[in-house]
Image 1: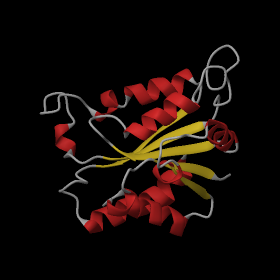
Image 2: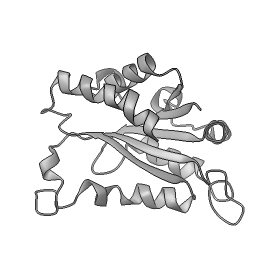
Image 3: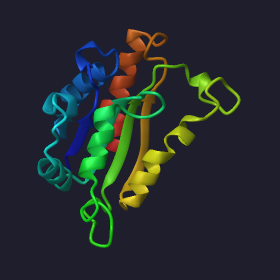
Length: 176
């Protein structure tokens, strides 16, 4: 079964992590379809019918993005708002995402240490991801966790990124 990977990075060509993750997916898995939101919608005019059809064609979906201000990039927020609409994804007749497996792949610029209750950020990553989990629960999909890498802005080495990408493209993608 193929997996749809939706990538939401506003400048993937200059990304330290997301670009390497994408390349690893293309190299290691023939069962992956990649869809880049910022490439597909440079003017933010999302083709809702196309996006909904894409989602209906796959039982496994990964949403890949950099963590922006403890959330997601703005086009991805718009994508969620537009695509996961009432009557399609939720509501009394909205069941198109029910039972689908959804996972996240998130590059995080800061150090892992800072994502603790008693650290500078003051919240764990799990707490900050709760809106994603709530959305996935609300549409009756099956949340399958998140693949992450910390320190992507300055701390992690290129070798660590490459190792993490291999795990993402082989183990994580096949485990869910």
